[in-house]
Image 1 (cartoon, one colour):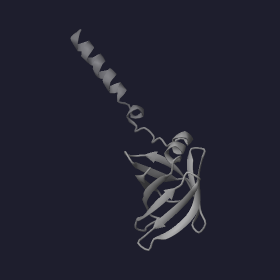
Image 2 (tube, one colour):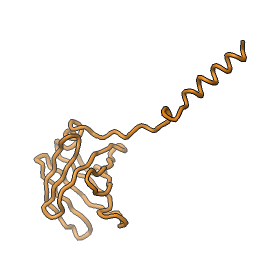
Image 3 (spheres, rainbow, N blue to C red):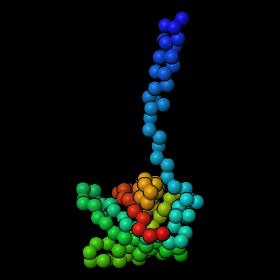
Image 4 (cartoon, rainbow, N blue to C red):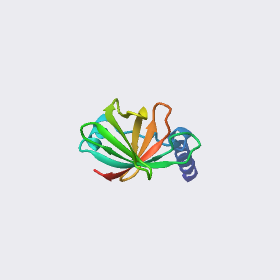
Length: 132
């Protein structure tokens, strides 16, 4: 009897370890409501990422104002790009006068860190919240 119980328990435990059960959960991205809450009072972030494949990552600071405007300051030369931001369909989208536009899913990856997942051929980047 003890042997049958051991066999039953072993099969039950091993059966639970199937590949479907062991798969990592898909990352969840912020919803419209979460994105709006994050940006509703304005947000200053340090953005890190490459703007082209096979190039070194660059860092910039972006100030997202609650009125939908954005200032992006990049590099030591402090080149400032002016644009706008919006939230729609669980996406964060920006449009800059001289850089063009793009949309991202945003995934929280730390206490103040977010991953920007591009939806239109751009490269991934990260946000580190500097000031809310």
